[in-house]
Image (tube, rainbow, N blue to C red):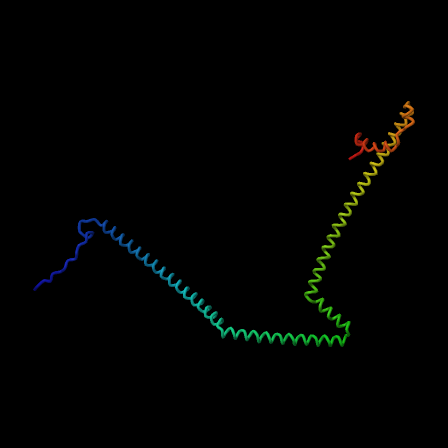
Length: 232
């Protein structure tokens, strides 16, 4: 019998007898770390692919929306479509004008009926009532109220100013009366002093030519200012 030769497995460095088990553990740890890194990178790649796929889908949706809008604009701006839209607008405009004319005719008919029923004055009153309920009447009333308010403010300011001026005039009149009284007192005193001097022994020429009262009155306004009798 022939014996088949069995192939021997290569003995690795960390499996050799007599060697320590630390290199084996270190290598296994390194392999595990590499596998973890590979798995992390693979997961990151998958996430990036998912993001890119989502971005591509969003871009395709936006592109489809823009293409649809462009298509709608292009269809709207076609000459045939524009002509059709213009015809539609013209027809609607004519219809609105006809309806407006019918409404005006009905209003005129109602107005004539009211005039015939209530007379000219009643028709005028109705027209006036309709105008008073309109926006133009409300705007006119608002403007009138605004002008009235401004006029009242101006009147109040003018009255206040008039009162202030009256008070000032009264104060000035009182001051003028007081100054007049003081000037009269000073004039009487100066006249009495001059007469007493003339009587006591003035010269005959001076006695013959006494100073008129007007001269003393002209100098009187200077005396209060020098003697400090006139209050400020």
